[in-house]
Image (cartoon, rainbow, N blue to C red; front, side, top):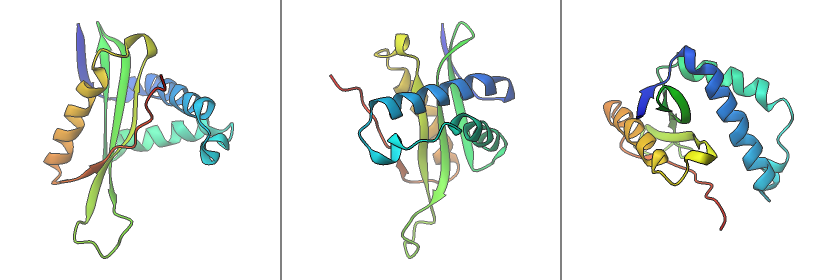
Length: 137
């Protein structure tokens, strides 16, 4: 049975593994110069970032689990707009969303987005950004 749960410290090893898989996938499948230049210390830096995510009131993370085993996750954060003069003080950002390959095409990413959207709404975030990297067919 698939469940979507808020991420806790016990989920940190999976979050780190998922981040490493996402970054490797993006680096290996991209022609973007920025992504091609990811340094090999991204795993260490990702561990620090995940720790901040789990501790911060400005972010939230959820894990999709099938019978208790993680199969995907999502991270949302609140951030300032790059246009400082804008009346909107903060927006949401879906910073990371990963679904294990064997679980894709099951609408798990869509199910992960729902609690992040609720979390944004609870924090009076009216808009959010969601950068997407879709699979090339």
